[in-house]
Amino acid sequence: MNPPVGTPFFFYLLSATVLIGGVLVITRKNAVHSALALITALLAQAGLYLMLYAPFVAGVQIILYAGGIMVLFLFVIMLISIERSQKERQFNKQWLVGIAAAAALGGLFIAVYTKGKSLFPEGSLTYAEAGNTQGVADLLYSQHSGIYMFAFEIASLLLLVAIIGAVVMAKKRI
Amino acid sequence: MHAIVEYIRGYLASDQTPGAAGNWFWATVYILLVFVGLSIAVIAMNWLERKILAHMQVRLGPMRVGPHGLLQPIADALKLLLKEDIMPAEADAVVFWVAPFIVVLAAFTVFVVVPFGPTHAITDMNIGVLFMLGVSSLAVLGIVTAGWASNSHYPLIGALRSSAQMVSYEVAMGLAVVSVILMTSLHGLGLYGVGGAASADTGTLSMIGIVQAQLEQHEWFIFKFFPLGLIGFFIFAVAMVAETNRAPFDLPEAESELTAGFHTEYSGFRWSLFFLAEYSAMIAVSSIAVTLWLGGWLRPFPNAWAGPRWDFFFSLFPGITFLFLGGLCFFSAARMPKHPYFRIQTLGLTGFGATLALIGLVLFLPGVRERVGDIFWFSAKVAAFMYLYIWYRGTFPRYRFDQLMKVGWKVLLPTGFALLILTAVLGFVEPPVAAWLRGVL
Image (tube, each protein chain N blue to C red):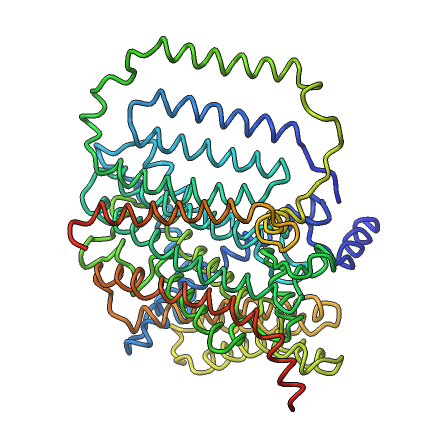
């Protein structure tokens, strides 16, 4: 296994892209611009997953979020009148709640950053890149190590109910 | 100088992709090679499509620029670059500017994992197929934003059509792909050296791994569990035409209804980016189909006709193909009118034929012969798909949008589900049944 190339550079590049994209999502007045910024952020996040040796999660992120959900977002946004939505106020008046939530999250981050060493067990990382997808599959489906089989089935049942519910609600006559 | 030659020779002897070797220099070289090869392929497709379509419709096609219109793509490219770049007055400038680049990037990035051979790939990813499907599905974002940013009716309708179409057909496409991934894990032959004997029942998503699985199972996946593999291939072959917005599913750019669909307002260089992206996306999905169902870089009958003699026989094909193309050029040059007006064209065609024949002769050299065989078979299979694309365009009338949706959701999707379940069942049942049959016989 070869050592990764230019790790700090790619980390800072991708993180900066995520942050800038995230800020643009909430500051752009035009909803399509926001959606494009969100796609950029999601793609950069997929790059971060790749750097964490989780290629399967990165691939799923690209397919589901950037390729699937965001296309539907854009599809809907394009149908609404951009001119009218641009005149609307962008921020509502819940800044007190917002500050509280941001402070709580910031406090959590600072706590993890300062106490991180004692919070997480020490140990070196094994690069699981070559077997990442297979590892996920083993945990989900394997006869011996498939400990998440039940959770997986429950989740898929929920999704099925959601799909059928969407069809039932969207269609007047079935 | 000597050191450089030794370095290159040392690399050529290795059996790794540059990505696996972690060699950024060779990775860059491979990326440039793939980029140049792809651009040449797109130029060639431009000429071939017009010529073949013309011959299907009993026309001559481009004949003016160069012998048999061979220089037509270059003339077209020059025209596109010199054309005025127009942007509609009310267009969203930034998005209008970015959209073609999204499409081009999505179309080119997927070639990072396309395996032209066991070592002839830029890199091999653990999630190869997933990466290809995911990144190529990003192209729809570019199309949708292009249609919206033009601030014009036809492009918007084209963009809406394209997003609905591409999202619908991605589902059926994914199901067909998953059935192949199931096949890679069968007979306890999974993983091919990735995970070892401990996880022999696990399949693989890696593009190189999938081809190796077909080699190990002595069968292209199109023939696996006949006719299941064939049905999966058929679903993919239909969905990939819809994914690339090509006839008979070219509703997003239906010229008889929407002028040019989502790229109506684009001109000059930006339009040529859409053109480039469309053709490289066609090559990309064709190479997925070739890798998944048609044995990727494998030559015909790698197991049944194994041995150095057959290897030698099949390694002659690349050279013979180029010699044949060169011979075709000489034949056409001999048939050119003898009028002095055609002198330059005849000379040019002879020169072109001589170049092709020279390439053919180089491909016969022992060192080259062994090295290009896999690339040749891969490209030949992809080329067959490219011809199919042109053939579809010359044969089928365009679908109506409701018909398109009906085919996608009511035919391909249920078939895909049935296919997936049947593949799983057969993969489970087959080994004991085969053992029992062997016992009986």
